Structures are given as structure tokens and as C-alpha cells.
Length: 352
Image (cartoon, rainbow, N blue to C red; front, side, top):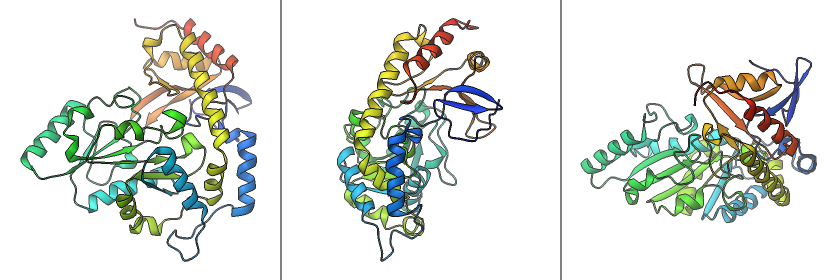
């Protein structure tokens, strides 16, 4: 069932005169409804304006972009970083760049459409992908290829172990990873997946994605080595697109303590959920990640009858597989988690 709302769906929302407890979406840190975060954002809007549509290549430039990008680079542990207006644009910019550079691109299963360009599509399974990569490199002994993937694959194939990647000749592979569901959430202090992927020692590593899911700001980021970042920033796509809202960049810089507190609360909520859940084997999840995916549509309907709504829709289009996913957030209370778990534990599953 679809629900129309007139305000941001935080831990609860109202629709058709009824209140529902909400465990869906991607507002992992609950920042969109956090008063302290909102106040900080409003202060920065008054300073920087509500938006900025000029090119980053313009002769008049906000210094806050470079300040925020320098901060991100230090946090993620990379040489350089730059931001754009959305995670989708960040991933499209990188994919488009490598297509125009005439690299051979190989897509991992279930890679987000943000990383795809015309004529390219995901491989059906990991074994087929590995075989195709080995065959191509054997036939082209001097070639360097690009492998694209999402760091968070909700059935656990990628983060945190990336076992299938370890079976590839990574010294000949440029890895491009979309970390939209990792930025601000995964790793030490929410550093995301860059540090883990870096240990694999691929030919080169570029990580991109949305800052909206973890950091609560409408922006995207691309991180990697200085030479490649300079080349990516020199593209027409970067110069021709409007940048992220400068007030968002300033808020990101000033909200460090809020991010830390929210991440701590999110991990407490995840720990409580795992502790109370009686049949964890029915859910697919990853360490430190607040999404819990399952396949039983009956559980979704049962929770809905109890006025609890989770993520439940076909993706990425109407012909895609339906998602059944419980998403915890830092804005949920301990009582919210307990109520959810009581209902899940009382549900009669149709299979063992």
C-alpha cells in the first residue's frame, strides 16, 4: 500500500488521519528532523542563501566547498575529494568519465543504476563476473579494466569482506565503488568503506556516492587519489552542473559533534534490535548497518496491520524485485525497537 504524507516521515508519520511507526527510508542518522541539526542548517542558509546555481568553475567561488572537501579527504583517509549536487550525479560523472576514456567496464550484480551508462549492465552473478573478467584479461594482457560495484549489497555479498573481489587480479583493476549507504554510517566514526577497500590494494580506488543518507545533506562526493580527482573535476559534466547547496557544505563542516552522537545512538539501536530478535536467521544484514532485509511478504503485511510501516516497494522500477526491509534510525527510541521486536517475534512464519 502507498502512503501520502505532508511532512518528513521521521520515526512516525501521519497518513489518512492515522499515525504509523516508520522503519523505512534512508535517513539513517535521523538528522532531517533533528532540531539541533535543523537550527545549524537554517543559520547557514541565512549566510549562504537557499541555493547556488553557478558553476564551480566560475570566477566567483565559495571557499566553503574546498574547506568541506579537505575535511572529507582527511576523514576518509584519501588524497583528495570533491562534491557535487547529488550522489546520483557523483556516480554518473565517474562512470561517464571512464566510458569516454575507453576503459572496459565490468559491473557487479545489483550495482545501482547511478553507476550505469548506456550499453552497460550488471552481471547476473558473481561467478559469471569473475569468469568474464579473467577471460578478458587473459586475452588482453596489457589491459587495465574498471570494476564497478555498490559497497552495500543488502544480501551481504560486498561490505565488509568483499570476498569475491579478493579472487580477482586487483593489480590490473580500477575499483569504482558507490558508498551511498556507507558514508557517515559504516566504519570508525562513519568513515564508510574506503579504508576497507584500500586494503585490497587494487590498481586504483575511487569511491563515490550520496551524502544525504548518512550526513543528511543534499550532496554527493567523489574520493580518490589527487591525480584522478583533478581529472574528474576537469570534466564538462562537473563544470556544467550546479554544485551542492553551500549551506549544506557549511552544515556538514560544523555538525561533527551531532554526527558522532547520532551514530552512537544508531549503533545502540542496532545492538538492541539484534539482542531482542529471536530469529535473526530470517534477516539479511551487515555489521554496523541498520538495514535488515527479509523475503516474507506476510511479515510486512502483519506489521502494517499493527501500524508499523517498513520499506516495501519494487525497485528500481515496477518490474523490479519487491524490497522488504526494516531500517533502523537514530531517531527511534528504545520503546520503538522493543515494540517492533515484540511483533516480529510473535509472527507465525509460513516456512522454517
